[in-house]
Length: 68
Image (cartoon, rainbow, N blue to C red; front, side, top):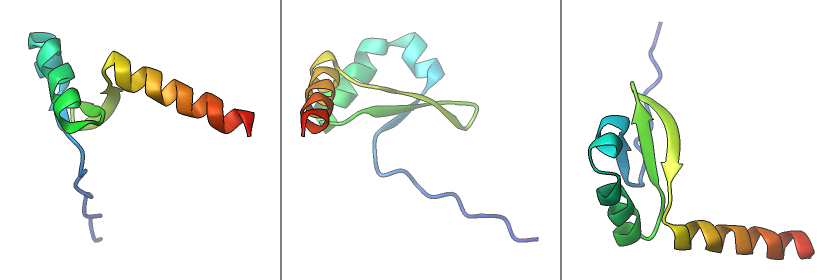
């Protein structure tokens, strides 16, 4: 049986351990990359961290799309 090859994410990633150690570093990583940072826990995506500005922009874009 062939194993599926995992696709490498082309976005910043970090571990839940790093988030616990220094969440502000992860927010800075998101700010520097101008995108969210995928947070992994035991090789599975646990969530995505965004800066406040990124989150508010996302909400605004969603509201604009819903208005169309």
